[in-house]
Image 1: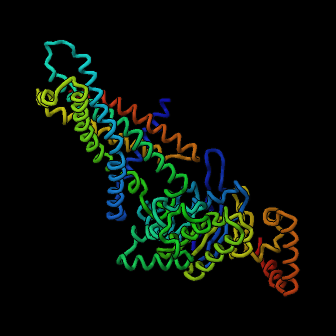
Image 2 (image 1 turned 60 degrees about the vertical axis):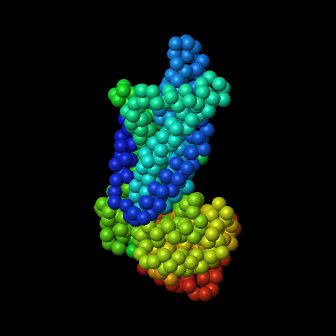
Image 3 (image 1 turned 180 degrees about the horizontal axis):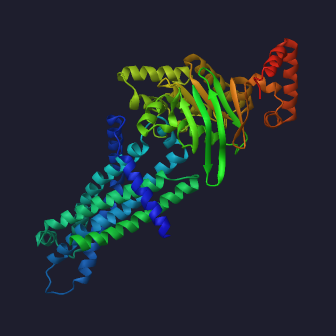
Length: 247
Length: 273
């Protein structure tokens, strides 16, 4: 097990090293990067939209359920919802979902390209396949996932406000008042730091498993599953590590 | 010209290529044939550099490809076109975009010139009408032809084809063989084909290398093969009763034509192994 860890880690580092070479045609690399931005950003927006709204709604209702003391002002619910969403739910929960959505897509796309010899075809043409196929995916994930996390934060808080108003546990005014109480801009920085890290993990780990597939369709499925599992574990581990370091 | 000098390749303890040497000449269709597991796919991958060799040299026009660094290899690779067994077309691109891809990546000239070149290549493989279709919308034979168009779009000096006829009906196979032979002669390309197909062997084999258990067992042309006394080669090529009878008929035909004299002379001169 230990040997396997070092084997994969070494290969992973070599893969990252292999990405850095002069692009054969910058315009084509840029095109590929923009395509990945669309695939990752726009392609995942729907699921992020849905989970963020419900995540915020549920957080508001559960916080209201637990804060039963009459001495605690209702606006505290919004404060708790805001910090929970910014600090944890928007970056971590969204990225866990994105590990499934984006990660499995990257792994299966590269795996399919490997099995159907498309990667070999690119190599034969003299193209650095790690640079052309993997680097744009990682860069697009690092750019787009924080954007999705920011959107998830806004939508989560909005979902929380809507749920509070609809259920009658907190009025809109009280919610807005709570959002402004003791706001720390550092929390947003912390959330962004996490999302950049998670974005890198999702794209690079999935690309590693997809790029190194050998065998057939069954192995593509296995690589896809493994990439999601490993990404999720690494996200949770880094979530803890970053929280311990930065907070 | 591609020259192989004593190339050897092992996977762990198992030696797949046991010192193969041969010369693949330009303007000729060079075939690598052999039963499954004989090492022909590994040999082709070693020639194009998808696998490294353990020992020996692969020379492209007297330049040692095995000793080159990545940058130098890239230069050679831009002169290589390859048709893969499964065509290896990019699923997300149309036929036209697939053929355009190498031109966009490495080609010079205006977009209009590039489009004209793509149209010319598609015309050459008789696929102009399928330009806007995606690979999933065309047949296996059409995919192979798109693969050929993509392989020749940059005017390669070397063309490699890995089992170009696998999964195709006999008529389409012949069409692909004819196309590859014509392109080889038209552009004076060094073509290397890895095949099992006996039609290809008999129709296009200007130079044939028969691989047996990782070694070059026999070398010659499709004309020599009819008179070969190599038992292993005969067992492989003329495996069925029908083909054995066809071989005898061909020998008889050549005997009547007087071609046997040339063959006999060639054998006496040691031109045949």
